[in-house]
Amino acid sequence: MATITVEDRNGERKTLTIPANSKQNLMESLKEAGYRILATCGGIALCATCLIEVLQGAEQLPGPTGAELDMLDILPHTASGDRLSCQLWNNQIPDGLTIRLKGDEHS
Amino acid sequence: MNAIKTDIGIIGAGPVGLFAVFEAGLLKMRCHVIDALPQVGGQLSEIYPQKPIYDIPGYPEIKAQDLVDRLLEQISPFDPQFTLGERVEIIDKQPDGSFIVTTNENTTVQCKVIVIAGGLGCFEPRKPDIGNLELFEGKGVAYMVKNPELFRDKKIVIAGGGDSALDWTIFLSDVASEVTLVHRGDTFRGAPDSAEKVFSMAETGRIRLILQSNVTTIQGTGHLQQVTIQNRKGESNVIAADHLIPLFGLSPKLGPIANWGLNIDKSAITVNTADFGTNVAGIYAIGDINTYPGKLKLILCGFHEAALMAQSAFKYVYPDEKLTFKYTTVYGVNSF
Image (cartoon, rainbow over all chains, first blue to last red; front, side):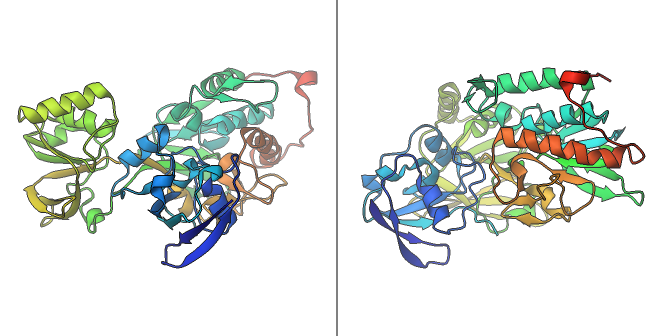
């Protein structure tokens, strides 16, 4: 289990508890917690609407590979700590992680 | 301009749109299928053709493209017609209750029923965050290369680091007077051959390659004239450009569907679960594009939705006929 800090698109920060579940990804947990994330593609690193910027703790996450790296590479204006939250499994999330939501939100 | 007349206009040629042809065909309803992608199969063919799918009834495992091929075989008795590579822009309801569907290429499909099986929506170019970008769309800014001749002897700036940015840089270097490729990173993950070629072309001066940089602003009077490129240190450089081609991949968007007067919730069309009809009589939405309480975005759910839709759509196509439910085991599949 990890306690993370999530900064929404208005700059408001809240803490969120993420159970160490290897069958669920961070995008799904953020949606469950009520954050408005489009997640059009459902978690196959295709739409980039679940893009987050890792402000703190990026070095404790496994680095992006494969489809995530391909997507991050073609996105315009990404920062060095940007990740696709659909590609981060919850059991890989370190305690104290601080993220900022960046992707398109739904209405 | 191409004018087509049919019973049901299906928007989206993914697995659910294709299966809708079968369910409609069983009830003697002809279909015309339109898709923005140049081939049928939707995301199965476009994104993961070789990925196995495990939850199609009767197939413990089937590759996505194989499922599309099987569906095409299954619907072939009903002779579906296709318009591919065109995006539906406008739906017009006629006084008699029928519809005229118009694509971006001005193809029109006149039909009694519309079935939206749009999946993830339309794949649209991802736009970079440049303040006045949209002001210059069609006036120097283009997100795809339709006619390379447009760029002959012009100064071109391509932004992006994927395969299409590499490919068009190489191709347009023979057409344009000057090609500049601007990439945020310092390496390319695209095809190694293309990346190598771009690096060697930059070395010999055939193109200009600007790495670790972004296009930040664009300027011009009436038409694009120059772009400002900023590197990671914050240093800016202004270069003359007739055209800017941002190539940052495609992102699925709801697109024109949002403008058709349908009830939308979280980028999906709300439908009733009795027949998957929308708030507009005669327009149905099935598959991943719709939403209702308990919705699951599964191909098999889309198949179910297609079956119920067809039973309901019958009344619009054959208003004077009574529909009796028939099993294929009893009546077979009667081709057109």
